[in-house]
Length: 263
Ligand code: UDP
Image (tube, rainbow, N blue to C red; front, top):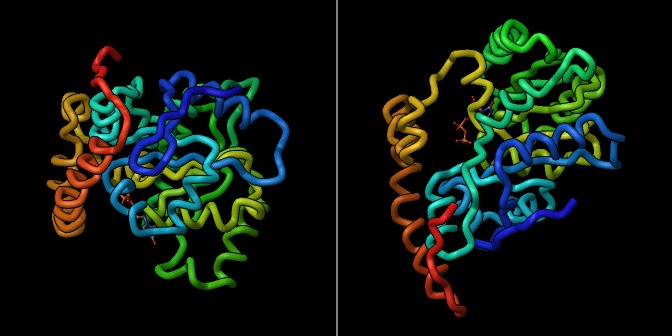
């Protein structure tokens, strides 16, 4: 099953709409286990900036089974460069869409890894209430700095192995979540892992997503700054300086291009 991938900012992005991405993932989730967990990454502006300086993140992106455009500016840039992505497929929309696709004949065993202590348990309660065909078989909030502690990593892998999920939702923030799953993809006892940022917080009702109109008009970042100014203002300020340069580099690459906003 090959689909078109477009190259931008040094990474390849799958040109998929949400329903196709869900179908593909459901096949993997209910199919034979492979030798290593497949994993999904969802680039936004911040990832494109981090990718310029983080070799481990680039390596993770290289081996991801699906690369889905999370950020509206990423989709817009693809159209400007004449290789249009059909739509945004954000991690935070993808997880509920997968939950929705689970059926009583094919329930979806899921493990939630990440978010502050207690948040994933609250998310589990909400998920069970809203999606009866999803079983949250485990949750865990790793302590700060866990990624550098082999014993802690061993315990995380053991917890996942005991729970035997099909789907692992990883909410550890970028680039930690992508680098972690890339390092441990051969030991993780799940068929598919999705690097999903703040999705566990959203499922728990701990943080709220931007209203739909803001998501549709590319203003979700503005809403997120409002909810967490201390942490995000610095991140977005850096992105606002670096991303235009990345756009310029991409635009001035050799090769003819004609913007395509038809999708
Ligand atoms: N987080 C975590 N452990 C860490 C760092 C972050 O569990 O060591 C969680 C944090 O509590 C939040 C999520 O990771 O739930 C990061 O969300 P963010 O909005 O930053 O995602 P991003 O936009 O970076 O993908």
